[in-house]
Amino acid sequence: MRRFLIAGNWKMNTLRQSGVALAGELAAVAVHEEAGVEVLICPPYPYLLPVGERIGGSAVQLGAQDVYFESPGAFTGEIAVEMLKDCGCRYVLIGHSERRAILGETDAVINRKVRAALAGGLTVVLCVGELLAERQSGQTEEVLDRQMEGGFSGISEAEAASIVVAYEPVWAIGTGVTATPEQAESAHEHLRKWLARRYSLAFSEKTRILYGGSVKADNAETLLSQPNVDGALVGGASLKAATFVPIIEAARKLAN
Ligand code: PGA
Image 1 (cartoon, protein in one colour):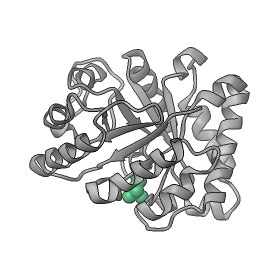
Image 2 (cartoon, protein in one colour):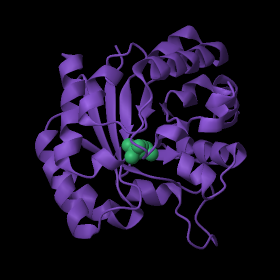
Image 3 (cartoon, rainbow, N blue to C red):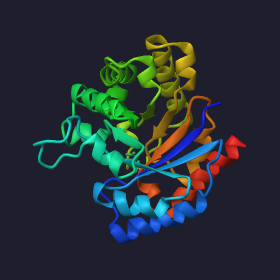
Image 4 (cartoon, protein in one colour):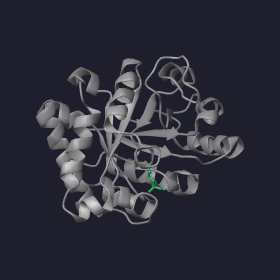
């Protein structure tokens, strides 16, 4: 049985005070480790330390939204894996569609980041997903395959055990348009089959595949109840405890 992962991607939101306050509310909800559900938050870099301090002692995990692949050195503006670890991060998001589209990240760059993060001992949430035009022209599976090939390139099965995949159809991110449970399940099933072909059936069955794209309290339970949906990567609704906690609760209900 795969453990649900409910992850909040705060993106470029919150200030120190509001971020720490939100973290405190979540720490009060996810007090102890649970067999069925894991909770993760990914604040902006400057708030990793105070947010990490606030969730210390709770079951809420800390992650970053990106990382650079080089070791510390002359890379102005970038952040190294060991810095994230030093700030208490266990997780890092890599390949989010906003980084692909706005910052121009290619599958090759994403792969270097994945490899560096794994080598440094972080768990990677590798984001993949098709654009609206790609879905409309029937290219969804081809795009997902290309992003998976790129992201997982040169990574052994043992290393890949520290990768969580997040399927985020770009047309559903921040738009209020959620993939239907059937659309999500079909993409997730496709991704799991890809993992089985690339590695092994046993590996594919252990790997968590999250859904992201306008996940909210009122659609979380239906999405999470799909057999191949193992959690959610939540943007907008992760910015308030009142909208994020019900998603955690939906996972708890299904896990028990
Ligand atoms: P959203 O964002 O929940 O606001 O659609 C999801 C994401 O980009 O991870």
